Image (cartoon, rainbow, N blue to C red; front, side, top):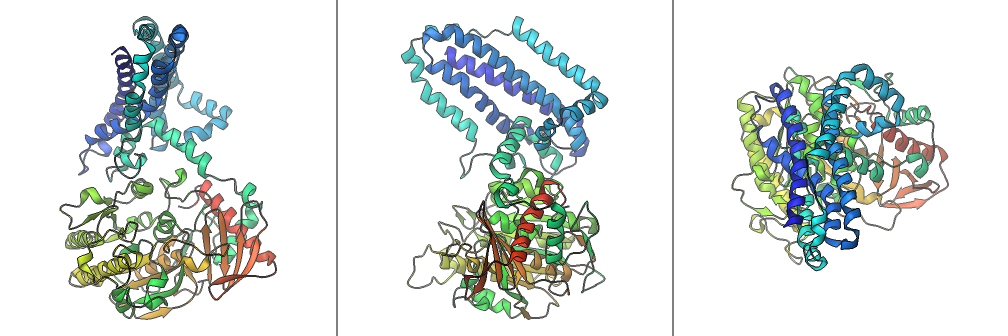
Length: 633
């Protein structure tokens, strides 16, 4: 009981510090979320979850010492733990207190900037003493006061614990370790809890209040070390001026603004009195080889084949990469794959990053993301809400779904809910831009089998049957939409995030980046476009069809523009491939680049094309620079 009492006491001290910090943030910024539809009191419940993760991590060391250290070291452990607890609680107080000026400056809880600025101690100290001298003094008094209280009134006597026999203490190790593991994981789902669990509202401020500052800081340190690769060490050096010039020239983008090197004004080729809505339906792992109209197998996607004759069909689109977050970034932000982790999970792209939401919000659009699974997966919820999306509808928000699989509700449930939401918005005469993300075509391939005629000769739970069901949902969605008034004012995009599992003997299996894309809508003439294209190109084309003159940094062009280039840029693990027409430069970590000819769906080695290889490196260097300097806005 003494061990449990001390652990619980330590836990409550930590949680109390975090609660007080969150409570004062809640009071200070109440006006900015007081009218939201979401229950803002839930910030304390979800916040407790984030706080518990941190508290359990801090408690791991005391738990180990309580249960596994011998009695002979009791006095030393007592001394160490008193110092440890004093330091940890003081650190919690400091971080919580520092959150207030940081929040006032950046409108977010401490993140990578909090750590990044530590490498400039002179400048930081000068800024703090210039602007926050009083706050610093109060902070010092707070921590000093706590140290005084701890030394004189807060009693932790760990010597008593070591009067318990070693065997009895050791028996508590496994149950306590299990409790802490559960607390740290804080999730019974597929993945441990993460920052997305704090993003429960469409209001960014209440989400920030829900977060835990220490968790936010530690996550930024972890992800920077793990994912933010030094591209010069991995791929080679190139002067940033040269890199950006090569990058922009290859993309045929003219911009004189160094602060936003890709920003340019783009006039629509379809000017109308009233702009259209936009719906992008991203298909999980739907490769071109399953779609007859793009050169694939017959009989798997009858609905797409039929719809392809009624819209703008892209037969030569290549995805950004092999992960959903790479495809999402391409379809929602129009950006290629950055080195390291995808921008959906990277720290510096969690707020203030360009998306269709930030683009269309000034034109009065309501933006929403609909996903049948848990949107916290891959930090999608955090990224979408952090970058301006007004509404997230994911698995917990589907009432009485017809089918629930391993990854969430079925695509049928997804399109039904989407149609309902669009009808509501249309009745309000509210313009909207929506992203739908399917789940059915993902192992273990759960879908309502009664909705389709299963393909003969293959297992029920297979890629082809899952894609056939996804195709069924696409057909049903467009069928339902056509019966509603919003259809005539909406541009629909159907595009894959990436191909099915990418495999092949080539250094970069380019053929396995080939995906289908189709744009539909009232007044869109049936056409087949066979030019080499990317997800950013498809996005730019869809935006062109909305009928708006826009300013954006999208790394692609509408096919109706004379600036459109025949290229693609692909990421395959740590390897990158730049394809221009049918020549491909491959850049690998710490190895010389190579040049290939893409012929009969395979890479054929050819002599080095030095310019093409330099251009490929320029893409990597430029993307890394644009992300790190936060220039993609």
